[in-house]
Length: 86
Image 1 (spheres, one colour):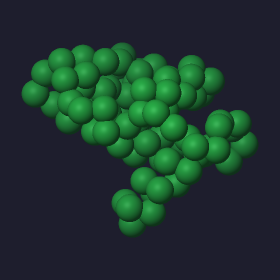
Image 2 (cartoon, helix red, strand yellow):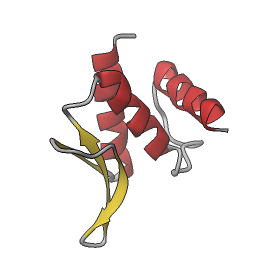
Image 3 (cartoon, rainbow, N blue to C red):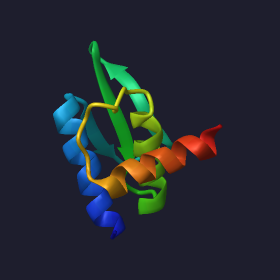
Image 4 (cartoon, helix red, strand yellow):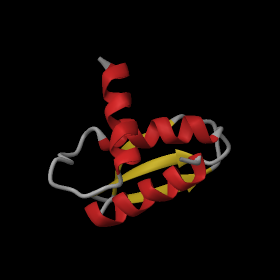
């Protein structure tokens, strides 16, 4: 699956979970943070797409995704990230 398609699947997953994904520029890595009592995932759009996908996958590991439908490629990417994080 193309990386851009995988990225858009992450955005759709965020919408289904009610998690806002904020894209910004700057000197930061990205990840989950709380802004005004709202949990958001911040992604540095200046980083390569591989880095942004890894940040999204790592961030979504914080959520229970067992009962959430997602395409198999997205679930596999998240699970692969989980195994690398151990």
